[in-house]
Amino acid sequence: MTEPDPATVRHCLTQGEFAVDGRVLPASNVTLVGQVELDGLSLRCVYKPVRGERPLWDFPSGTLAGREVAAYEVSELAGWHVVPVTVMVDGPFGPGMLQQWIDVVGDDVVDVVPEGDVPAGWRHVLDAYDGAEQPVSLVHSDSQGLRDVALFDAVVNNADRKAGHVLVSGDGRVRGCDHGLTFHTDEKLRTVLWGWAGEPLGDRDRECLHRLDEELSRPPVADTLCRLLDTAEVARLRYRVHRLLSRGRFPRPPDGWRAIPWPIF
Ligand SMILES: Nc1ncnc2c1ncn2[C@@H]1O[C@H](COP(=O)(O)OP(=O)(O)O)[C@@H](O)[C@H]1O
Ligand SMILES: [Mg+2]
Image (cartoon, rainbow, N blue to C red):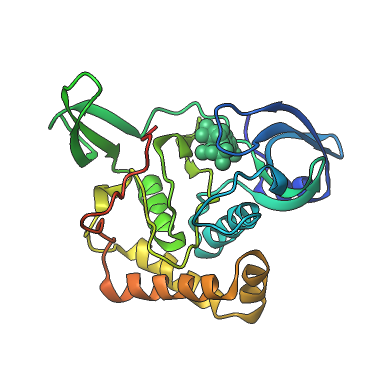
């Protein structure tokens, strides 16, 4: 089934009636699924109530839903469109985020292969030993869509880009989910998408970053983000955009720091 256009999805998520019919397991937080209905349109959604958030040592309590919505806004402002429509709602278990569900039917874009066996058109991330002590390589595809996700992650400072948080729909479009661990003011980029580390930015990368920078300088945009994040986090977001543009390269993983999420999938 083709997806309705994003404006219709957003309208339906904000104005529609949402009913829970299941829970996603395993998940770190209370992650519920259900249908939102409006004017004969029915859409599958993920709902994460704030009160179902698991407390974390490094992120303030009750802030993950706002981070997920801010991640969606940033992806739209830059023109990446790599996050399913995500809005704040007052749902059946109180305030939380409501996100469009994406049917994942596309091929995997992150994989583990025998060491050094990088498929054509894929990028190498790292070598390691698997559970059976066999040498393997972590690899991911070299598509524009996945590259957009990787740059988006660097901008939002995503601390949890697992392979399972990359969603590929039937049309081959690549999007991401689970953006609760984002926008921290400390450097926390932790991702399986390091295949472009240190590479020069391309024209599209720079265009998206410039567009985002321009949008972030507009007071209404900054106000919207400051309602979802704290002001220091919004300032640091702008700083990361400037730093990427001035370095002109994808970030590299810092030495001596575990920059790969666990588990990987
Ligand atoms: N919008 C979505 N569309 C499709 N699948 C999703 C979506 N959001 C989450 N999922 C699936 O549900 C799993 C758990 O959701 P996630 O956002 O990772 O929850 P948690 O914050 O509890 O880790 C994801 O790994 C993914 O497989
Ligand atoms: Mg998750």
